[in-house]
Figure 1 (cartoon, rainbow over the protein chains, first blue to last red):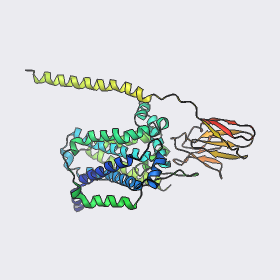
Figure 2 (figure 1 turned 120 degrees about the vertical axis):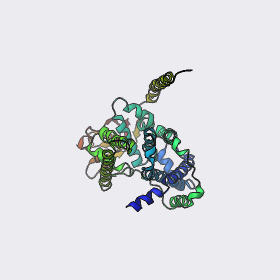
Figure 3 (figure 1 turned 180 degrees about the vertical axis):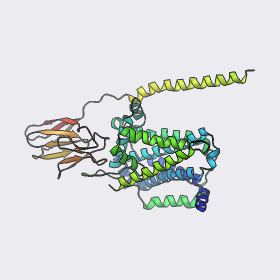
Figure 4 (figure 1 turned 90 degrees about the vertical axis):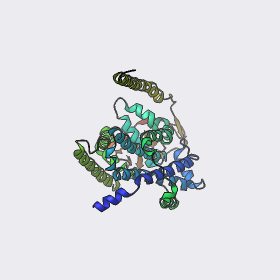
Length: 278
Length: 135
């Protein structure tokens, strides 16, 4: 067990995530040259079927972004003991990068405009609109799909959320430089994987009885079946974020918070499995 | 030379003013982003007449004609807004996200949705000329 822990901690997850981020941003710029938010599904379908190398660049953007998020999670776990020297403010800001990264991932998913992406966007909008007093304003700022289509979500995906992530993480990431030369195998793997595996796209089919959201959304989608949107979509996720933000060994409530996070994640995994098997 | 307490007080004051200014700035931003240009009702024309008991599936609506009456329902699920589909075999409308079910008239048959589907105005044109749906 100790060997596994040490091996895991010795892996340079932070550098891997930065490399994946570089590839994600660069491929995102390339995809953006052809993507049109006014006709999202048509645009993505055209990318996949007509534009030379369109499917490749979309896959590269999709998989590098997914990897970036997964590596970030591994990085947080891997450096957890080292990060105990961070101040509470530093820790809160850095852990806040995770939900922001997830939001960027999610908006990218919605921007596909296919049946599942569009539905996921509509669900997010419905959740926001259920927040009393400020929900409508938050929706107007970040989503507003019903009123504005993909216009605002696209703007936030490529600029606002990226800036927010950068502001939260800049103090941390500016210290590190990641050269492609040092991670050639990983870089080649991402580039090669994207050649063979096309990023998912699910066009609207008549009579579809069940659609699943992205992998990180499955548990929430299932929970929304039983609980009101405000509870399932806002209160439940916020409890996890608050618990992570205060998860430092110097806090007296470290052990209960740690147990809460484990239970939360286990429950979410169970809900995701249920959702996946429907 | 200013004493450390005065300096600290001044910094706190500046921070407080900055927070107040940021909150004040949110008001025009929220008004700006929340404004939606009033839009005219969208009119969709279906040029073909439907057989008795037939239906037409549009992007945003579904139109039914049972011979005696015609009606159109929104395809936006009243639970969380996913796009519902029509299952002709069972004569039900079902949401693929959480499987809320609605009758052909738009009434809730099975939750989690609680409200019926929105109805749109339909005008049946004379001489089998089709329909006009106002969204």
